[in-house]
Length: 224
Image 1 (cartoon, rainbow, N blue to C red):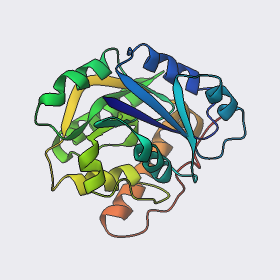
Image 2 (cartoon, helix red, strand yellow; image 1 turned 135 degrees about the vertical axis):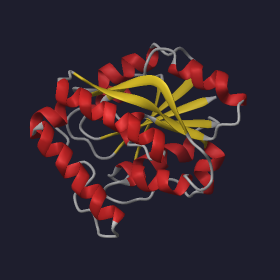
Image 3 (tube, rainbow, N blue to C red; image 1 turned 90 degrees about the horizontal axis):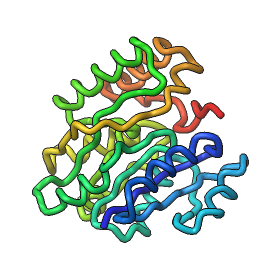
Image 4 (cartoon, rainbow, N blue to C red; image 1 turned 90 degrees about the vertical axis):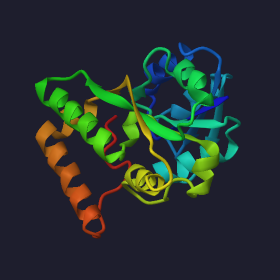
């Protein structure tokens, strides 16, 4: 069985499209949505759908994803951002591969709506991932639950929980980057500016690489 864990905070506008794409995946998975203190009607939206397992946790993607993983019944966990849609057949693809020797990985990525700049960002990131095996959270990172527990789950830090998690995985397994593509809403880039957002991300990663606190907060960039 596969468990999809979705951390949310004030996502009443964008979440329906993500949940609709999950429903199209069929019934071979469970969906766990972890709310971090929404006040925009997100919780009410979730509670109206009996097919979802809804829990609440301390705010922050790391704590929220850990809370979802703690109650997951699946042997494989997928961590899906609220503004990201899985490609058709993604659950079946992972379910069919469950008997193989892979332990963790992520999907290739693109933005929508996109322009040439965002298309270039996605191409560059997908190439980087094939070399580094360090993925971002909007690539729908997946991992076997036993390995997730072995590394202690996601670090409960304000930012870069996805990068640090993948760094911890890298010595233990050779993760895979699937060719199938997840699609993320480009609202944050459009709101803050594409190049400004890209350079801010590079600055945060550079600070992390050289051992400095990256700064920032995990949900500070949510655009309603």
